[in-house]
Length: 214
Ligand SMILES: C[S@@+](CC[C@H](N)C(=O)[O-])C[C@H]1O[C@@H](n2cnc3c(N)ncnc32)[C@H](O)[C@@H]1O
Image 1 (cartoon, rainbow, N blue to C red):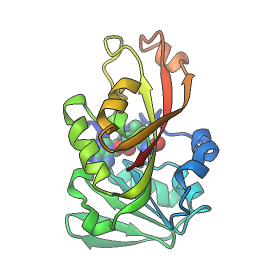
Image 2: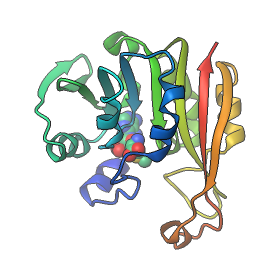
Image 3: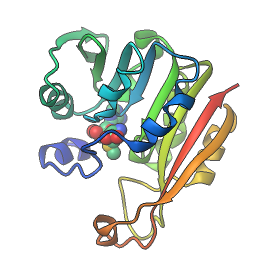
């Protein structure tokens, strides 16, 4: 069983929010500036943000590695779905939300078409440092010209905690995405709480970036 599979099986999913992400609600106008009819959510887990995004756009498309996460998402939100085999991944399809079950790196933009809007919350921080360049290159292969990414990352002293979530500091985001276009830091907030204090952290910053492809 891989790390994510065991986290989901053992219900160690502290990253899962019981409400819609407040940054998404606050900054959705910037992400959805071009009124896209589809939004892509990589490494989506069972986030309620998928449901909220359907109030703003026609179709939301996620990809998630772990079957339990995908099945729980549809069951907990009472959404009927069909399962289809789509090349390398299974596709759970519903009226407004499709989730590809499998490894993000096995999904390609020919399967989904490209997007004007991508929402990455706690997704890049799930990727180990050596794979991050490949993750970003793969992510941006799904992005249309002038497309936008709303990205929420975490920054802390990586010597204090092993991760995931990994620390992906603001400077690393800037260097990973700078070749793509413009980056704007929309918000930084110190979110250190007992959960992370007990893991040894003395500081935990959350950064929200808007990235616009040139
Ligand atoms: C930290 S969680 C964040 C989930 C979601 N974005 C949220 O805000 O709740 C990262 C998720 O990515 C999934 N994941 C990890 N590696 C993946 C991969 N290579 N392809 C697809 N999903 C992956 C994990 O199973 C987990 O559900």
